[in-house]
Image 1 (cartoon, helix red, strand yellow):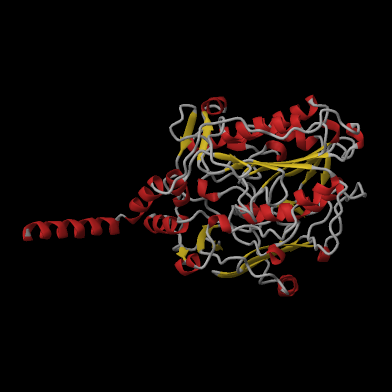
Image 2 (cartoon, rainbow, N blue to C red):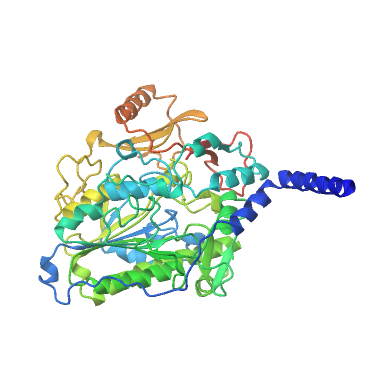
Length: 552
């Protein structure tokens, strides 16, 4: 008996020691095998059908609004600006056509350098200083696992900081949402007779207060987890990123699932980008006789990197493998845009529909592809131009002249008031909106006048303002101030902070003014992640390389 107890104790000690030195393996195993949802088989979505006959001709109704949002798309991933994936080997003809048939906003910015706050700014037209929605919600347990994995990886970067106490005091993933008291564009458009539909990624919370249905959308087909296809699907080509802890978590934890109007999870009907497009076309057909707002929030080109075999073969022999998969994902996104445009034309809605295309932020450095944001510095999770410069194209036949180029700086906060004005839906009295109308009456400069001529970005202590051609970045970790003149130096190579203290002080005063009376973040940031400014993940960081910490 005594020998048996000793043997058991030895096994427990040995097992505990192994688990201690293999924490990430244990955590990933737990993420892969515990706490996952049941997912039912695919089934048809019962989309609500509008009237069989329109009460007004299409030209007399308020315009339909279709907003297509990509995820983590780099400014150099589309060929509109002369670039394109893999040195232009994979053009984006449908996105290019949308841009060419309307307005190209050549200085367009995301709300911030991560996804969820940008989406909140798109829907509300308001900064985090008003809403408190400042950080991207992360799935429960993700911070702990990513922190453990990061500590084991030899990237050369400074260590990631994980704040366990902040996690314990924060709401769970579903509860980290945009407050129900905020007014979204779907709610604003409702009195004007619009039927609003959300398809795809939401990332603004779930449940009675936070879901798309709770925030004014009549229908929502939600991306319930994060796989584009099942990992073992015979039609899927996968590219895993051994140098990225987030990627390891996603492959371990995420599922292939969707849900309709808050119901149970079920399997989508194909590769997500194609499935969302199939369903979006059904929405267009069902609502052809009434004004509708369609928010199509794609998951492409976000990790995990997965493409269909057909797209993978179509893009050709591109190397490395992850770049070829990524290129195939861009191809699928471009195909979606073309199919949406074709559907609107087929339904006779083309001339009275506004189509807007953008991305939630710049391309991610953690995919290890150095050219996605070229020629700009930085990535998603930095406020350099590469992290916040995004495509923004607006097509409205008869209202916007094809080939229009608007150089005035614009941002995601401008979309909500633009959609409201176009939809003949007044902003409620007393509701402060930070964005301006993108489609004003002056053809030479249609963008509305912005207070202080300034656009702001922030994530905790990392803050940025652009006023005119000047851009100031300030952060506390590491303590650093950058000043750039974007007219002369759009790629932020020449820091003028030391030589122009007067301009630094002027712009710091703007940042301070922007923070006066600001609402505190709804929940604390739990991670401070180091991000190299000029090197993607997978390229060894060396002492002296510039970096920032991104608080989230």
